[in-house]
Image (cartoon, rainbow, N blue to C red):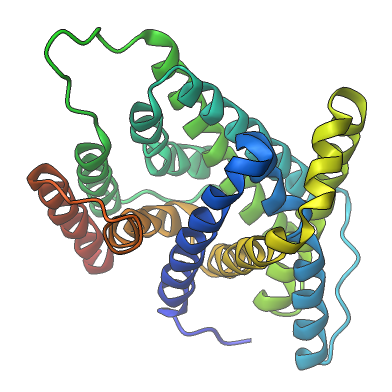
Length: 300
């Protein structure tokens, strides 16, 4: 199946937009479910939609989903477990009262994706790609890094460690998903992406339900009772993941996750339009640098 070389760009931009919408919806669920419960919604309520996407892609292509082998299951499990652990560490960093610091450190993910992609998949990192990653990442960190107020304590080491390890696990998750798609050997990229997405969400949902049933049954019940407001967030989460996986099926995780930094621009738009928060001069400068990195990514 011939794939247009620019299609990964369309999928990545669509994924970033859908993920921004999902984050805004999850924010509304925090009041009733807490941060952890609102986070679990994306997996539990996203699984049914992932299965629907898989059925639609299978029907459109006239091909049944391939049975995943051990390698595909292993990579999908690695990606799914890494994503859950990464989210947990990111939340731990935020509990240190360093929300923005945590976000800044997690945005080092593209750098680590490039390293993991080279180590595990042999994805080549050209000098131009490395420069694009560095420029775009520095722009995002400039946008995210908090301005220290007079008399404020210095940033502790724990949020930094949590954020960096979280970014590493998010990077490992992206590599696991791309490796799982490649290992599946599906007849076309869309069917491969949809199959691994459904597999990964099934693994994640099973682990979350088992974990909550063991240690926090009240939260599991609260998540189940909040199904009405959670359905749309689950749909947007599954839609974002569908586009991410389609992009991973076409191009390297390093290029996809570097372009994915444009999510910060979408987040700024939502922050300004929906939550009525202003954009500082430093954030504007950071966006300009990040855009320069994205332009360089396209040029290379």
